[in-house]
Length: 115
Image 1: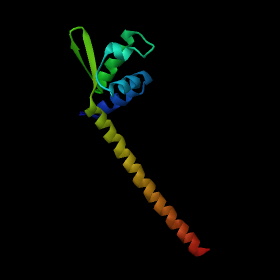
Image 2 (image 1 turned 45 degrees about the vertical axis):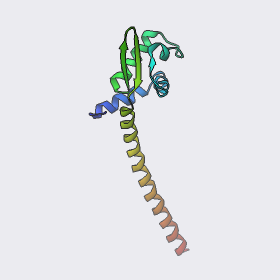
Image 3 (image 1 turned 45 degrees about the horizontal axis):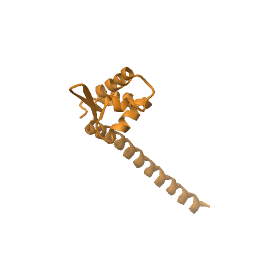
Image 4 (image 1 turned 180 degrees about the vertical axis):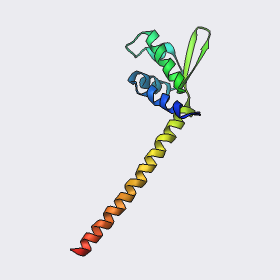
């Protein structure tokens, strides 16, 4: 869960990269090994590990090493926090647009009465 505004910044920075978004998309289907995440990407395994470090640092992904296999999974709490932040902004803009719509409708009525 996000405890600091900086964590939200890290999350959005992590999601700014298309390769990391592709990894997150794959993890939406369920946990995956680093090799499974790397398979569709045109990059070295070490580059994939670096991208995973960014995702893990942002709180979006958790990894666990069992034996020789590192398994990654999405932290849905972190995604919920980002979704909540986006939803709050969307609700704010929807209220503003509703007020603007009401104002414009009122202006139309006033112009219609004066014509």
